[in-house]
Amino acid sequence: MSSREPGDAEPRPPHDLGSARTPPRSRWRGPVPTWWAVALAVAVLVAANLLLNHWAGPLRLLTALTVTALLLGILRLAGGTLADAGLAPGTRARGARWALALMAVVAVVYAVAALVPATRPLFEDQRYDGMTGSELAVRVLVVVPVGTVLVEEVAFRGVLYGLVRRARGTVWATTVSSLLFGLWHVLPSLHLSAAKPALSDVFGDSGPGAVLAIAAAVLFTAAGGVVFCELRRRSGSLLAPMGLHWALNAFGYVVGFVLR
Image (cartoon, rainbow, N blue to C red; front, side, top):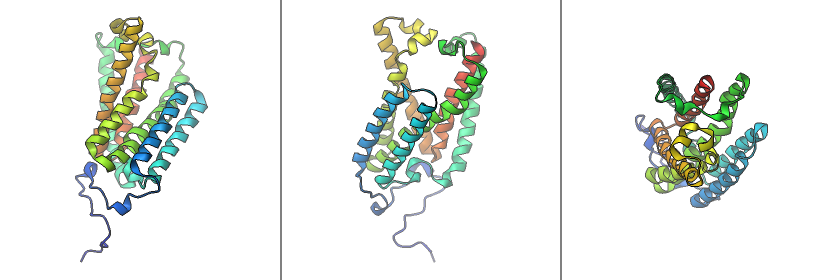
């Protein structure tokens, strides 16, 4: 005889972590309607984008932590839970395994690309000039995981993905999250062409070339957002895209620093 009460949600099949059915409506109610919560989250992210791209050091990290807490609070106000953000305790072990595997793949790919003459220039970046080993360690172990990965993954593959998915399903969640993730990278891409010689060779140093470089960066990161969302769906955990996101950024810094 089942011990499950009549109002409980149906148990989730262990092989379908990424496509859990929507729980009863009583489990997804809060003082803030879902789409109002989405709009509020976007407003927070617009302000955060301006602040994070103009502040550095401890102030940037404090801002990232504050924004992360605010976004999770918005999810909670809409009736969501940590599971809706991909942070349910039961999914962490699986997500960690995905993350470690993806980190290993990125490390191998970057190592090979750094050794091949045709792809080595992709790692050249003027921002590494004058960087010390201790500065690199702080960037890789603190700035990237807290100031970039934590806030962006919680925002786009956690809160926004969870809210929109509950309202319209996975396709809508992936589309909205990925488009906003691409637009999030407009400000960081303003001087990208000038900093990376490989990009300036392609787009040139003119105004139109800079616009094309920004557009390419937005499209590239939006496409990356689709991949991150799919990792979140398949693994059932936010840790999987977090691991890949950190590896892509952190190992890129390491390889660029070594090859400078």
